Length: 151
Length: 160
Image 1: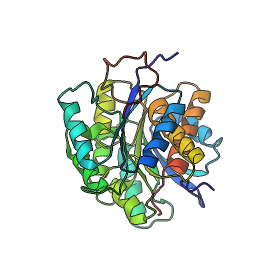
Image 2 (image 1 turned 135 degrees about the vertical axis):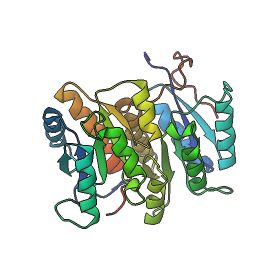
Image 3 (image 1 turned 180 degrees about the vertical axis):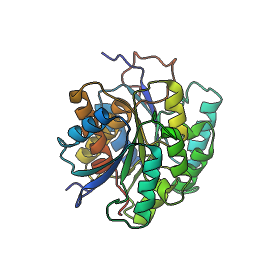
Image 4 (image 1 turned 90 degrees about the vertical axis):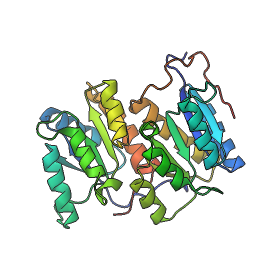
């Protein structure tokens, strides 16, 4: 394999924080077409995501620490931005790249997300085909071009 | 045909060979881009301060590619300084390095790098890495429009 590329020995863990069941399903489906193997964990709110990550840190095998987090912004409860803020303030969890995936194209949301250290801002695609291409480029970047922390 | 304004990439890299590889790789890209190169941290800080002041020859970068090991102030210190600055902290900084050390990977992500790319050894590898990186940051991701007034009629304004 080319020197700069990561040898993927085990599937990457993706934590999707998304309240919409339709969007959850779309991401799950789009990931099945990818050559980079991944294991998708889904939670519906920021609070549930924090709970998941707490369990990861406690070594709970059913909640492996994610290599990357895909985060919706508009969710009931604490919402995406608050969640992003709290994990970036955590000394251990702050190393996990968080990519915002939102229907919002508002410049304020984009700017605020990057200010809170989002590692990308993706606007949700309406068609499955488009979503597949987005997920393909996203997984290529995060799981092949860029190196992940060995967990 | 380029519908979009060029994106601005700031490369912070002291090795002339690697500068050339990155330059060549961006030239192959199908999105309009303007690559700016500085060869040290101090040069990068100077570039960014000029951007802040609105100097036209130093447009605000949409993405920074940062080598870690350079003489003078180190790459991590620059990353820290950028992420602590209320204006520059929105710019994604991707590490581009030969370092294989796991400690560097962890430290870079802790300092909020937006990716850690190990330098490929071949031109082909470089081109692939730059192509994948460009696809992710400029096709998949939305970015902040810093340079609304930049002209879009130049497809390759590569300037050193």
